[in-house]
Each structure stands twice: as C-alpha cells, then as structure tokens.
Image (cartoon, rainbow, N blue to C red; front, side):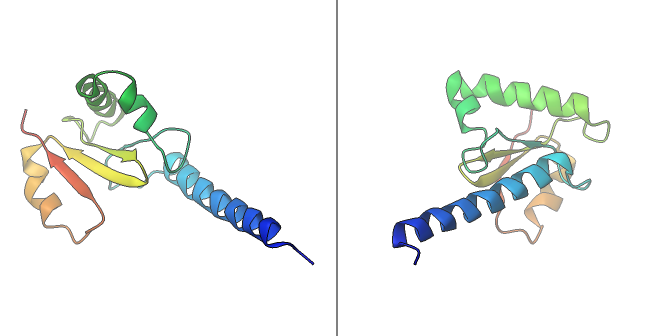
Length: 115
C-alpha cells in the first residue's frame, strides 16, 4: 500500500514533469506568430531571477535588443517575458498596439511602450 506521502511526492513529480515539458516545448519550438519568449531554466520561476539581479530596466532593454537581433520580422524588439508562471508581452511597435489589445487572449498581460 502506498502511503499518502508517497502519493503526494508522485503527484508533485508528475506535475513538475508536465510543466517542464510544456516549458521546453515552448522554448525549443516557439510559435512563429508570437514574439520571442524570454524565460529562465525553471518552468514556474522563469526569468524572475534574471529580472531581479540588477536594474530591471537594463534587463528589459537587453531583452528588447536580443529580440530585435534574433528575428528579422521583429525590428522593434517585441518580446514575451515569462515570470512567476505568467507571460507578459512587451510591445514596442505602435502598429501592433490595436491588434494586440483587440486579440481574444485574456491570459496575456501587456505593457505597451512607445519609444
């Protein structure tokens, strides 16, 4: 007979494996119609460690520069930041403001910045 502690450990292990696989799938096979994802190695924590290391503005500026360099279709450097299990999309191109705010995705948090 399995003890309740063993069952709890098994359930937590299955949940962590599921979250890790979702995280790796998003990092290794990113959707082509979404901005690049900036995340850390841990699925739930994401980029919170990198964001908290120094001034957050410097980290966000670096993320924007990397996103603009990595994708030719993204010259303004729009990106999605994964922190604390949530995705926050940073939109810098005014041409995308209306399309983003009119999108049906309620789970996204957005910061629209006009440089």
